[in-house]
Length: 366
Image 1 (cartoon, rainbow, N blue to C red):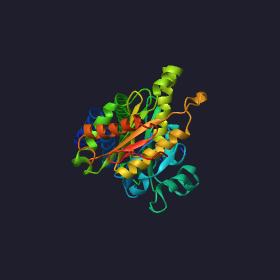
Image 2: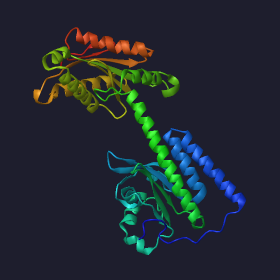
Image 3: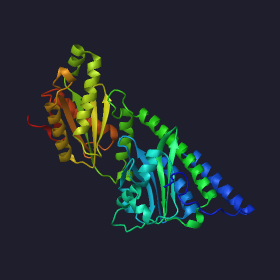
Protein backbone atom coordinates (compact mmCIF):
# COMPACT_ATOMS: atom_id res chain seq x y z
CA UNK A 1 0.00 0.00 0.00
CA UNK A 2 1.41 3.34 -0.98
CA UNK A 3 1.53 5.77 1.91
CA UNK A 4 2.15 9.12 0.25
CA UNK A 5 -0.73 10.48 -1.79
CA UNK A 6 -3.75 8.45 -2.95
CA UNK A 7 -3.54 4.68 -2.93
CA UNK A 8 -5.18 4.74 -6.33
CA UNK A 9 -4.68 8.04 -8.12
CA UNK A 10 -7.81 10.02 -9.02
CA UNK A 11 -8.44 11.22 -12.52
CA UNK A 12 -6.91 14.54 -13.48
CA UNK A 13 -9.22 17.45 -13.01
CA UNK A 14 -10.31 19.90 -15.68
CA UNK A 15 -8.89 23.43 -15.62
CA UNK A 16 -10.82 25.72 -13.33
CA UNK A 17 -12.91 28.51 -14.76
CA UNK A 18 -11.82 32.04 -13.80
CA UNK A 19 -14.78 32.48 -11.44
CA UNK A 20 -14.01 29.15 -9.76
CA UNK A 21 -10.39 30.19 -9.31
CA UNK A 22 -11.49 33.45 -7.72
CA UNK A 23 -13.92 31.60 -5.45
CA UNK A 24 -11.26 29.19 -4.23
CA UNK A 25 -8.75 31.99 -3.80
CA UNK A 26 -11.25 33.80 -1.57
CA UNK A 27 -11.90 30.60 0.38
CA UNK A 28 -8.17 30.13 0.93
CA UNK A 29 -7.80 33.76 1.95
CA UNK A 30 -10.60 33.40 4.51
CA UNK A 31 -9.11 30.19 5.88
CA UNK A 32 -5.64 31.72 6.22
CA UNK A 33 -7.08 34.78 7.94
CA UNK A 34 -9.13 32.68 10.37
CA UNK A 35 -6.21 30.47 11.26
CA UNK A 36 -3.71 33.28 11.79
CA UNK A 37 -5.97 35.81 13.51
CA UNK A 38 -7.06 33.65 16.43
CA UNK A 39 -5.11 32.09 19.28
CA UNK A 40 -8.20 30.28 20.56
CA UNK A 41 -7.54 26.62 19.83
CA UNK A 42 -11.20 25.58 19.62
CA UNK A 43 -11.95 28.38 17.17
CA UNK A 44 -8.99 27.30 15.05
CA UNK A 45 -10.05 23.65 15.00
CA UNK A 46 -13.60 24.44 13.94
CA UNK A 47 -12.38 26.80 11.22
CA UNK A 48 -10.24 24.00 9.83
CA UNK A 49 -12.99 21.43 9.83
CA UNK A 50 -15.55 23.73 8.23
CA UNK A 51 -13.30 23.99 5.18
CA UNK A 52 -12.80 20.22 5.15
CA UNK A 53 -16.54 19.74 4.99
CA UNK A 54 -16.93 22.33 2.25
CA UNK A 55 -14.36 20.72 -0.02
CA UNK A 56 -14.92 17.00 0.57
CA UNK A 57 -18.42 16.69 2.07
CA UNK A 58 -17.59 13.53 4.08
CA UNK A 59 -20.15 11.53 6.06
CA UNK A 60 -18.05 11.94 9.18
CA UNK A 61 -14.84 13.78 9.90
CA UNK A 62 -12.68 14.37 12.89
CA UNK A 63 -9.59 16.14 14.14
CA UNK A 64 -7.46 14.32 16.68
CA UNK A 65 -4.81 16.00 18.82
CA UNK A 66 -1.71 14.38 20.22
CA UNK A 67 -1.48 13.73 23.96
CA UNK A 68 2.27 13.36 24.30
CA UNK A 69 2.09 12.45 28.00
CA UNK A 70 0.04 9.33 27.20
CA UNK A 71 1.43 8.76 23.67
CA UNK A 72 -2.03 8.67 22.14
CA UNK A 73 -4.54 10.79 20.24
CA UNK A 74 -7.91 12.10 21.39
CA UNK A 75 -10.82 13.41 19.31
CA UNK A 76 -10.83 17.19 19.74
CA UNK A 77 -13.51 17.60 17.06
CA UNK A 78 -15.78 14.85 15.71
CA UNK A 79 -18.72 15.66 13.45
CA UNK A 80 -21.08 13.53 11.41
CA UNK A 81 -22.38 10.00 11.57
CA UNK A 82 -21.02 8.10 14.63
CA UNK A 83 -19.41 11.27 16.02
CA UNK A 84 -20.79 10.50 19.48
CA UNK A 85 -18.93 7.20 19.46
CA UNK A 86 -15.71 8.80 18.29
CA UNK A 87 -15.55 11.58 20.88
CA UNK A 88 -14.81 9.25 23.79
CA UNK A 89 -12.22 7.14 21.96
CA UNK A 90 -8.46 7.44 22.36
CA UNK A 91 -6.12 6.12 19.69
CA UNK A 92 -2.67 4.84 20.71
CA UNK A 93 0.14 6.08 18.45
CA UNK A 94 0.82 3.40 15.85
CA UNK A 95 -2.69 1.91 15.97
CA UNK A 96 -5.31 2.33 13.26
CA UNK A 97 -5.20 4.90 10.48
CA UNK A 98 -4.77 7.95 12.71
CA UNK A 99 -2.20 6.24 14.92
CA UNK A 100 -0.19 5.10 11.90
CA UNK A 101 -0.22 8.58 10.38
CA UNK A 102 0.80 10.14 13.72
CA UNK A 103 3.67 7.69 14.10
CA UNK A 104 5.06 8.04 10.56
CA UNK A 105 4.08 11.64 9.83
CA UNK A 106 2.77 10.62 6.40
CA UNK A 107 -0.62 11.00 4.73
CA UNK A 108 -2.94 8.14 3.86
CA UNK A 109 -5.52 8.67 1.12
CA UNK A 110 -7.76 5.71 0.27
CA UNK A 111 -10.31 6.54 -2.47
CA UNK A 112 -11.91 3.13 -2.17
CA UNK A 113 -11.67 0.66 0.70
CA UNK A 114 -11.86 -2.81 -0.84
CA UNK A 115 -11.63 -6.40 0.35
CA UNK A 116 -7.84 -6.46 0.55
CA UNK A 117 -7.86 -3.72 3.19
CA UNK A 118 -9.46 -6.14 5.66
CA UNK A 119 -6.02 -7.66 6.11
CA UNK A 120 -4.30 -4.33 6.73
CA UNK A 121 -3.88 -3.82 10.52
CA UNK A 122 -4.58 -0.11 10.13
CA UNK A 123 -8.12 -0.85 8.95
CA UNK A 124 -8.62 -3.74 11.36
CA UNK A 125 -7.94 -1.44 14.30
CA UNK A 126 -10.10 1.29 12.78
CA UNK A 127 -13.17 -0.91 13.13
CA UNK A 128 -12.68 -0.88 16.90
CA UNK A 129 -12.09 2.87 16.98
CA UNK A 130 -15.34 3.67 15.20
CA UNK A 131 -17.23 1.25 17.51
CA UNK A 132 -19.33 -1.70 16.48
CA UNK A 133 -22.49 0.06 17.71
CA UNK A 134 -22.25 2.77 15.07
CA UNK A 135 -22.52 0.45 12.05
CA UNK A 136 -20.41 2.89 10.06
CA UNK A 137 -18.97 1.18 7.00
CA UNK A 138 -15.75 2.84 5.83
CA UNK A 139 -15.82 3.19 2.04
CA UNK A 140 -13.11 5.86 1.64
CA UNK A 141 -10.69 7.62 3.94
CA UNK A 142 -8.33 10.57 4.05
CA UNK A 143 -5.94 10.79 6.99
CA UNK A 144 -3.33 13.56 7.18
CA UNK A 145 -0.89 14.64 9.90
CA UNK A 146 -0.67 18.14 11.33
CA UNK A 147 3.06 18.73 11.75
CA UNK A 148 5.09 21.66 13.03
CA UNK A 149 8.80 21.80 13.87
CA UNK A 150 9.24 18.11 13.04
CA UNK A 151 6.52 17.10 15.52
CA UNK A 152 3.09 15.66 14.85
CA UNK A 153 0.52 17.78 16.69
CA UNK A 154 -2.55 15.95 15.46
CA UNK A 155 -4.31 14.13 12.63
CA UNK A 156 -7.25 15.00 10.38
CA UNK A 157 -9.55 12.14 9.30
CA UNK A 158 -12.33 12.22 6.71
CA UNK A 159 -14.47 9.13 6.06
CA UNK A 160 -16.73 8.46 3.08
CA UNK A 161 -16.15 11.67 1.17
CA UNK A 162 -17.49 12.36 -2.31
CA UNK A 163 -15.09 10.78 -4.78
CA UNK A 164 -15.64 13.53 -7.33
CA UNK A 165 -14.06 15.98 -4.88
CA UNK A 166 -10.78 14.05 -4.77
CA UNK A 167 -8.50 15.77 -7.24
CA UNK A 168 -4.86 16.80 -7.29
CA UNK A 169 -6.07 20.33 -6.66
CA UNK A 170 -8.16 19.56 -3.57
CA UNK A 171 -5.45 17.30 -2.14
CA UNK A 172 -2.89 20.07 -2.56
CA UNK A 173 -5.29 22.48 -0.88
CA UNK A 174 -5.70 20.03 1.99
CA UNK A 175 -1.95 19.74 2.48
CA UNK A 176 -1.58 23.54 2.60
CA UNK A 177 -4.48 23.80 5.01
CA UNK A 178 -2.89 21.20 7.28
CA UNK A 179 0.35 23.22 7.30
CA UNK A 180 -1.51 26.37 8.32
CA UNK A 181 -3.49 24.44 10.92
CA UNK A 182 -0.37 22.93 12.50
CA UNK A 183 1.32 26.32 12.80
CA UNK A 184 -1.83 27.87 14.28
CA UNK A 185 -2.28 25.05 16.81
CA UNK A 186 1.39 25.25 17.78
CA UNK A 187 1.06 29.00 18.35
CA UNK A 188 -2.11 28.52 20.40
CA UNK A 189 -0.34 25.96 22.58
CA UNK A 190 2.57 28.35 23.12
CA UNK A 191 0.15 31.03 24.31
CA UNK A 192 -1.56 28.50 26.60
CA UNK A 193 1.81 27.60 28.12
CA UNK A 194 2.64 31.27 28.71
CA UNK A 195 -0.76 31.85 30.32
CA UNK A 196 -0.26 28.79 32.50
CA UNK A 197 3.07 30.13 33.72
CA UNK A 198 1.39 33.35 34.87
CA UNK A 199 -1.03 31.42 37.09
CA UNK A 200 1.29 28.67 38.34
CA UNK A 201 3.51 28.63 41.42
CA UNK A 202 7.10 27.79 40.46
CA UNK A 203 7.90 25.83 43.61
CA UNK A 204 4.93 23.46 43.84
CA UNK A 205 3.45 23.46 40.33
CA UNK A 206 0.08 24.39 41.87
CA UNK A 207 -2.01 27.39 40.87
CA UNK A 208 -1.03 30.65 42.55
CA UNK A 209 -3.04 33.11 44.62
CA UNK A 210 -3.66 35.38 41.61
CA UNK A 211 -5.52 32.54 39.91
CA UNK A 212 -7.36 31.70 43.14
CA UNK A 213 -9.06 35.09 43.25
CA UNK A 214 -9.88 34.90 39.56
CA UNK A 215 -11.52 31.48 39.97
CA UNK A 216 -13.39 32.48 43.13
CA UNK A 217 -14.79 35.56 41.38
CA UNK A 218 -16.18 33.18 38.76
CA UNK A 219 -17.65 30.65 41.22
CA UNK A 220 -19.18 33.30 43.47
CA UNK A 221 -21.07 34.85 40.55
CA UNK A 222 -24.54 33.20 40.45
CA UNK A 223 -24.79 33.95 36.75
CA UNK A 224 -21.90 31.58 36.00
CA UNK A 225 -22.65 28.53 38.17
CA UNK A 226 -26.28 29.02 39.08
CA UNK A 227 -25.49 29.89 42.68
CA UNK A 228 -24.23 26.37 43.44
CA UNK A 229 -22.34 26.22 46.75
CA UNK A 230 -18.64 25.59 47.01
CA UNK A 231 -16.31 25.07 49.93
CA UNK A 232 -12.79 26.19 50.76
CA UNK A 233 -10.20 24.41 52.86
CA UNK A 234 -7.47 26.69 54.17
CA UNK A 235 -4.34 24.75 55.15
CA UNK A 236 -1.24 25.89 57.02
CA UNK A 237 1.71 23.56 57.72
CA UNK A 238 2.47 23.28 61.42
CA UNK A 239 5.94 24.35 62.64
CA UNK A 240 7.25 24.68 59.09
CA UNK A 241 9.80 27.28 60.21
CA UNK A 242 11.57 24.52 62.14
CA UNK A 243 11.97 22.54 58.92
CA UNK A 244 13.65 25.47 57.17
CA UNK A 245 15.83 26.26 60.18
CA UNK A 246 17.03 22.67 60.65
CA UNK A 247 17.26 21.43 57.06
CA UNK A 248 17.51 24.53 54.91
CA UNK A 249 15.20 26.23 52.44
CA UNK A 250 16.02 23.82 49.61
CA UNK A 251 14.61 20.91 51.63
CA UNK A 252 11.73 23.13 52.69
CA UNK A 253 10.83 23.90 49.08
CA UNK A 254 10.95 20.20 48.22
CA UNK A 255 8.60 19.40 51.12
CA UNK A 256 6.16 22.08 49.98
CA UNK A 257 6.04 20.35 46.60
CA UNK A 258 5.43 16.99 48.29
CA UNK A 259 2.64 18.47 50.40
CA UNK A 260 1.05 19.76 47.19
CA UNK A 261 1.15 16.20 45.83
CA UNK A 262 -0.53 14.89 48.97
CA UNK A 263 -3.29 17.48 48.68
CA UNK A 264 -4.03 16.63 45.05
CA UNK A 265 -4.04 12.89 45.76
CA UNK A 266 -6.96 13.28 48.16
CA UNK A 267 -9.24 15.28 45.86
CA UNK A 268 -11.86 14.77 43.18
CA UNK A 269 -11.07 15.58 39.55
CA UNK A 270 -12.96 18.90 39.67
CA UNK A 271 -11.27 20.14 42.86
CA UNK A 272 -8.46 22.70 42.58
CA UNK A 273 -5.42 23.30 44.81
CA UNK A 274 -3.68 26.66 45.16
CA UNK A 275 -0.54 27.73 46.97
CA UNK A 276 -1.72 30.76 48.89
CA UNK A 277 1.77 31.83 49.94
CA UNK A 278 4.60 30.60 52.14
CA UNK A 279 3.45 27.35 53.72
CA UNK A 280 -0.28 28.03 53.20
CA UNK A 281 -2.55 26.29 50.71
CA UNK A 282 -6.18 26.61 49.67
CA UNK A 283 -8.37 23.86 48.23
CA UNK A 284 -11.49 24.78 46.25
CA UNK A 285 -14.28 22.17 46.24
CA UNK A 286 -16.87 23.14 43.58
CA UNK A 287 -20.39 21.99 44.41
CA UNK A 288 -19.37 20.67 47.84
CA UNK A 289 -21.39 21.49 50.95
CA UNK A 290 -20.02 21.60 54.46
CA UNK A 291 -20.27 17.88 55.20
CA UNK A 292 -18.55 16.88 51.97
CA UNK A 293 -15.80 19.45 52.57
CA UNK A 294 -15.28 18.14 56.11
CA UNK A 295 -14.83 14.62 54.73
CA UNK A 296 -12.23 15.85 52.25
CA UNK A 297 -10.34 17.79 54.93
CA UNK A 298 -10.27 14.76 57.22
CA UNK A 299 -9.06 12.56 54.37
CA UNK A 300 -6.20 14.94 53.55
CA UNK A 301 -5.34 15.19 57.25
CA UNK A 302 -5.04 11.41 57.43
CA UNK A 303 -2.99 11.26 54.22
CA UNK A 304 -0.52 13.77 55.65
CA UNK A 305 -0.21 11.80 58.87
CA UNK A 306 0.44 8.60 56.96
CA UNK A 307 3.14 10.03 54.69
CA UNK A 308 6.78 10.82 55.40
CA UNK A 309 8.43 13.77 53.70
CA UNK A 310 11.87 14.85 52.56
CA UNK A 311 12.90 11.53 51.00
CA UNK A 312 15.61 9.98 53.22
CA UNK A 313 14.87 12.50 55.98
CA UNK A 314 11.48 10.81 56.46
CA UNK A 315 9.99 13.82 58.26
CA UNK A 316 6.54 13.92 59.82
CA UNK A 317 4.63 16.93 58.53
CA UNK A 318 1.36 18.06 60.09
CA UNK A 319 -1.06 20.87 59.21
CA UNK A 320 -4.00 22.90 60.51
CA UNK A 321 -7.20 22.95 58.42
CA UNK A 322 -10.05 25.47 58.25
CA UNK A 323 -13.26 24.82 56.27
CA UNK A 324 -15.91 27.30 55.14
CA UNK A 325 -18.77 27.08 52.63
CA UNK A 326 -20.09 29.73 50.25
CA UNK A 327 -22.46 31.54 50.58
CA UNK A 328 -23.49 30.64 54.14
CA UNK A 329 -20.12 31.50 55.69
CA UNK A 330 -19.44 34.57 53.58
CA UNK A 331 -21.20 35.98 50.50
CA UNK A 332 -18.12 37.60 48.96
CA UNK A 333 -14.75 36.22 47.90
CA UNK A 334 -12.84 38.00 50.65
CA UNK A 335 -15.35 37.01 53.33
CA UNK A 336 -15.33 33.31 52.45
CA UNK A 337 -11.51 33.26 52.45
CA UNK A 338 -11.49 35.13 55.77
CA UNK A 339 -13.93 32.61 57.24
CA UNK A 340 -11.84 29.59 56.20
CA UNK A 341 -8.67 31.35 57.31
CA UNK A 342 -10.10 32.13 60.76
CA UNK A 343 -11.05 28.46 61.22
CA UNK A 344 -7.50 27.47 60.33
CA UNK A 345 -6.09 29.92 62.89
CA UNK A 346 -8.50 28.53 65.49
CA UNK A 347 -6.81 25.14 65.05
CA UNK A 348 -3.38 26.77 64.84
CA UNK A 349 -3.83 28.49 68.18
CA UNK A 350 -5.07 25.40 70.02
CA UNK A 351 -4.57 21.76 69.02
CA UNK A 352 -2.84 22.05 65.60
CA UNK A 353 -2.97 18.94 63.36
CA UNK A 354 -6.77 19.10 63.17
CA UNK A 355 -9.78 20.51 61.33
CA UNK A 356 -12.15 23.35 62.27
CA UNK A 357 -15.46 23.91 60.46
CA UNK A 358 -17.14 27.31 60.22
CA UNK A 359 -20.23 27.22 62.44
CA UNK A 360 -19.07 24.05 64.19
CA UNK A 361 -15.61 24.79 65.52
CA UNK A 362 -12.77 22.32 66.04
CA UNK A 363 -13.50 18.66 65.43
CA UNK A 364 -12.91 16.15 68.24
CA UNK A 365 -9.33 14.78 68.07
CA UNK A 366 -9.06 11.66 65.91
